Length: 186
Ligand SMILES: [Zn+2]
Image (cartoon, rainbow, N blue to C red):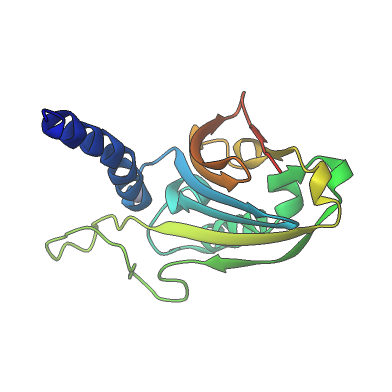
C-alpha cells in the first residue's frame, strides 16, 4: 500500500479552504466586507461584517457633532435591509428586524478590537461592525437570487467575500459593485 502520502496530501488540500475561511473570519481589511448567507427553506439569514472605516469613514470615537452625525447615518444605512438585500420578487421575502452590533458604541476612545498601541492618544483603533439580517420567504421554491446594494450604499467597499450555505451546499463567492448578484439554489 503506497496510498499514505497521497491520502495525507488530499487531507491537507481539503483542510486548506477551511483554514483560509477561518482566517478570513478574523480579517480586518479596509474595502472588504465579509458576509455569511444561509438559506434553509423559507428562512434566509445574512450576517454582514465590515470595517467602520468603510461604513462610517473613520474608526475612532466620534469627536465632533459632524462625526456623530456620520455614525448615526451609518447605523441607519446598515439597518436599511431593503436597500442592502433585494430578493427576486417571486420568492416574496420579508425582513424580520436586523440586529446591529457596534464595538465600543457609547464608549469614548475605546474599541473592543483595537490593535496594539503604546499609550499614544492618537492611535487608531480598528473596529468592525456586524449586522445580522433575517428574512422569511413565503414562496421559497421561487428563491433564485439576492442582489446586494452594499456597494452603492457604501462606495468605499470594493468587494465582499461571501460564505453561502444553501441547497447546493457550502461555497465561497465574491461580490463586487459590478457583480453584486448572488445566485441561490433551493
Ligand atoms: Zn481599520
